[in-house]
Image 1 (spheres, rainbow, N blue to C red):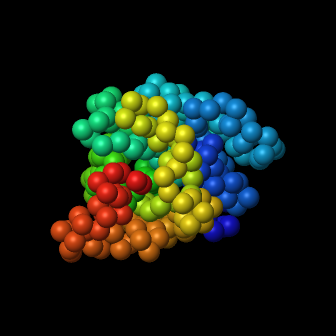
Image 2: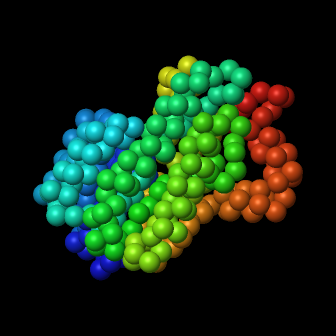
Length: 269
C-alpha cells in the first residue's frame, strides 16, 4: 500500500474516533495527504498533536449540515489542490424499538449517515472525477439486513448502499471507482454513542467489544480494497454469514437475528 497512497489526497469524515481515526493513523505513515473532520474539537486537536509535522488538514464539522460539508470539502481542495479518495465514514447508531422511540431519533440518524454521505460525495465529485479517484461509503451489515432495535440505522445504511450503487453505475465510464464497505461488528465507540429512544447517547455498549474486529484491522482491510478498486467489502465471518443467509434463506435469517438480539421478548443487544 505504501506506493499506492503516497501523495494521494484522502478525505475521511469522522476521523477523530474508531474506524475513521484508524484510517487516519494508517494513511499518514503511508505518505498520504489526509483531511478529516469531526464534531469534537478536542479530539481533532489531539489528532493534530499526534501527527504534528505531517500532512493533515482538520476541521470541526457536522456532516448533517450541508454548509459544514461545503466548508470542509472546499477548504480541503484549497489546502491540497484536489481530492483523490473520499471515505464517507462519519456515522451514528441508535438502539430502541420502533414502538418506543421518538421519530426525531431516526431523522437524526438519517441526517448524519445518509445526508452526510450525499453532501460530501456531491461536493467532492468533480475533483474526484478529474483525478479518476475513488468514493467509499462505510455502510454496514445493517445495510443488507434490517436489524431489530436499529431500524433507523438500518434505514440509513440501506440508503447509503443504494445511493452508492446508483452512483457506481453512473460512474462506470468515468474512471472513478465507487465502493461500499460493510464492516460487521467492529470495536469502536459507535455503540457507546448510539442514540436511545429519546435521542440521547446510551453511554454503554450492549456487545462484548473485546471479541470484535479492531478498528485498525478494519481500516487495513478498507485500504487494501480501495487499492484493488473493489465494488464491495463485507467483513467478519458473522457479517458474511448474515448477508448470505438473508439473501438465500430470509425466513431462517429472521429467526436467527431475532434470537441473537432478543431474550425473553426483551432487546438485549
